[in-house]
Amino acid sequence: MDAYAARIERTAALPRAGFWRRWAAVLIDWIVVALPFQILAAILFTATAGIVQMDNGFFSFCAPTKTVPEQLDPAPPHDSNFAQVCRISFFGAPTGAILRVGRITREGTTTTTVSQSYMLDADGKPVHGTSIDWIVALAFLIYLVGMAWKTGRTVGARILGVRIIDSADPAASGVPVRKLVIRYLVMTIGFLPMFAVLVYQLVAVGGSADAMFTGDFFRWFWYAAVLGGLWGVVLTFQVATKRDPVYDRLAGTAVVRTRGVEPPYPPQ
Image (tube, rainbow, N blue to C red):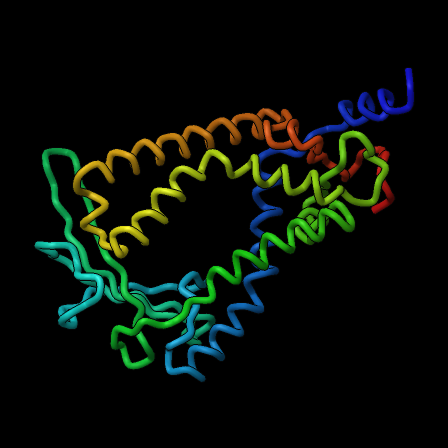
């Protein structure tokens, strides 16, 4: 048996990390990345009077409101019958505020909710401000790729005793960037149609919530959502049964347990 085949065989014998261990590691990593941005968002929200904010925070409180400003852009769904204000904070320091206006309809056992969201400034007035949520998401992706490239482990992976390895070279200290890019692209490919439909909704119809439930748009959105859901179920099943999911097989990577396992990779 040549050296390459021997490495592949040794990799195949390593115990794979299960679903909950992976999920907990990702949760820890998200906290590690999001925490400093929460502090930054609290500072920016106060400094800009709510023009710059972060809408996905650690603490969120929503309450009904009877005050709905006129001439909201885009217009709220027609026949709206509810409105609520959600305030996002970080240990009491505001980081964002959102007004949701929408319509709830019930037909038999089916309940449909259509809502439109608007950013609010520090005084509670609608504003076309700037959200830093996309920066947080980008930073999280860079963190995942960068840590796996350098060491094969993120902070969460280290705590939970798991590691991403190159299947062809498990003794390497990290994973090649090329393989990591393939890994995350394949991981998200099933959700891309839903993302594309949402982008179309934002660009072509100006972000109107009503437009999502009229004509052909909702049908295509439903198809894309079902496809994304099925993709998520397939990946979850593969991970839960401790098999290499399709994105790891195509990328040539694996997520293995390191705690209590004789390592072919660098020591912990």
